[in-house]
Image (cartoon, rainbow, N blue to C red; front, side, top):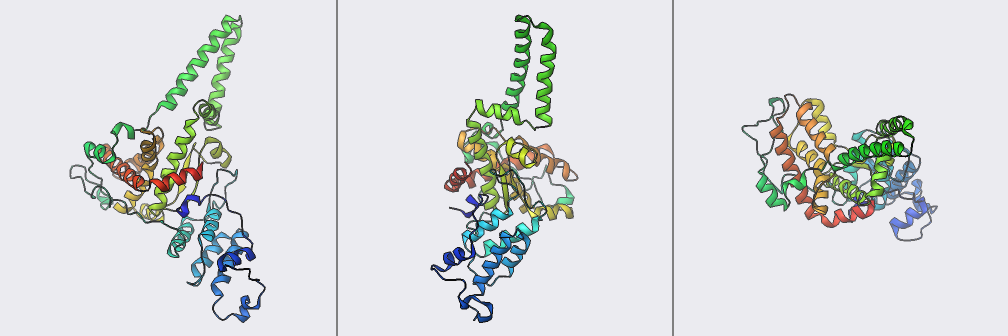
Length: 384
């Protein structure tokens, strides 16, 4: 029952009287003089601080609420319910909503909120996992040494046999299948050919070429303007299990980000959600890492930041492979890691070094998800 399991679900705002009753276990009247500042003896300041936070959240003043949280007395009753209100208010996107919010809130403010809620024991398990501690020791590859300008970040050495032995999975199960795009290309070619033959058989050969051109333009519009929305909807209708896999995949990213201490701001589960929200892609988990961002701006990348980011990135592939015996999604996740290490770092890491880093990260993700199986299952249920 990690608090993060429900952190992107909208919660109904409690009015101040109901919140007072919740935190004090009684039907106290908030108009009681004991709760007025002029009659404060110091025992009620924490309760008033919570009420001010709720008021700010209800007014949409998120940053002010975070400031109030940081300055609240130590005895302020910051409960999990209040944490859920903060988390819901900070969400960029909810699958049930067609709008995005708080795009202008900086990652630093979100990190401040998570840190403060965790310090006050309102976020169970947040940041409790130290990546690298459960698998292979951080080792530099002498033959594939990291670039000197990023000397702190070193690639891992991971043997394929050790990966398979410790994960309990063949390495092929961790290579995302590219069957979806191949299926679409085959289906598109078959449709064009079928329409052409059908038109000629029915004596409408003169319409065959315009019909084929129309189908092609519809496909192009779907890919460019709608980001594959139509195709994905058709594919999900034909293959209902795809939605389960998408949720399992994103729950892997979500849980690992939360456990590794990276604030989560939302998730999307379909191209329709992404299209409505104006977010590129067909599914994804939105999280932030202020330390990684700061290091990249300073031209340095430490092992800790790279390990944390790599594990969260490979979390979706690991989750699918554990659940279904084969990862289908995750090509874009691999692309992000390749881009980070092979293009954004100067000089770039070699292909062998990137492969080793990916193997280490997916193994770490698998071992964490195995230990946190119940939490992962609970999160999948909450996201379904």
